[in-house]
Length: 382
Image 1 (cartoon, rainbow, N blue to C red):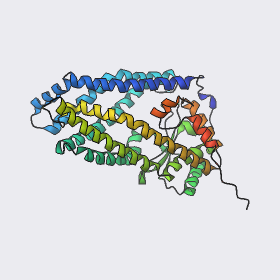
Image 2 (cartoon, rainbow, N blue to C red):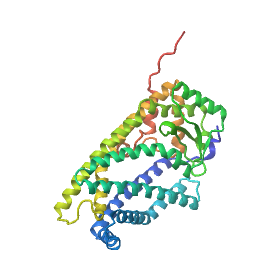
Image 3 (tube, helix red, strand yellow):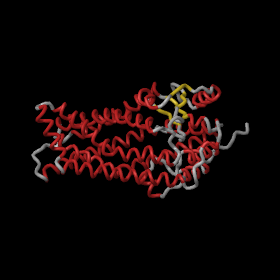
Image 4 (cartoon, helix red, strand yellow):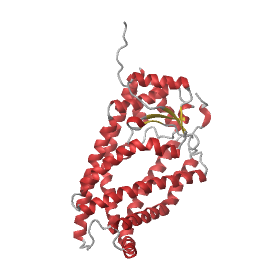
């Protein structure tokens, strides 16, 4: 284990850190809604769409591509100061980030490139569905959402993560052998165990069991490997195994797809009703109405978020229970969770309403209490 004195946050820092990020999240979401409303009702969206139509004539694919590209660029430009404050200033103020502004800005450009590609692909296909079937497009959109999420699960660990972080085979052979033996006992095949280079960017620790099929791999951050015991690391990995044993990924995927279908359905009906109510000559598939489409998608997503989070929290408790049973006791998981609380500046017991509405994981304090209450099978005396 490494030096525990690497970083000691001030008492109460975690609560302040999370409170600031929570306020910024709510502020950003509200600001996006206001910007979308202004974009539409000021006539800016219609002017852009009509200008592109005048310039390129009957070329709907090109018009949508340019409209969406310009719109996303405008969004990033307007919210860039907030992104700097949230992602760079606050992280440095609380001692979490180790990046220079140049490196942080480079990562933000990479994120923009990824977002732009996904944004263009998703909404270009969605508008193709919308124009082909103005009333039934939501069904096709749901299917496309499902396919997209599954493909990202395959592609992200192989193509996207290495673009942002250094991933190297774990060089601690003893630990690698212990992990391989542990996963063999759990009958969980993986393609490899990798050292995840978070330490060049942040003090936070993390571990992940990512990918599907041939791309499934174990990622252990260097910030975790340098400070946690072997027993704690195995307990964290056992938690991830629990998710796979319980089929939590397909369960959560199924719930998210069902909620997405409902959101698309409500958006389709609302968008059609709105165009009739205000007497618009534009059809719902007109790209000029994109701000209204996105407004509906965001607004209908709001009540879905607590439902998805509630189910996710229940699966976290189940995975913790699996880890306790797998490693033969609660303490390795408990000490790992408590260590992450300090290292990642996590509020161990946030207000109940915050956890209910915004958190996909239970509070650390509740997870610790739950883990310690997990009954263990009696030891064999034979």
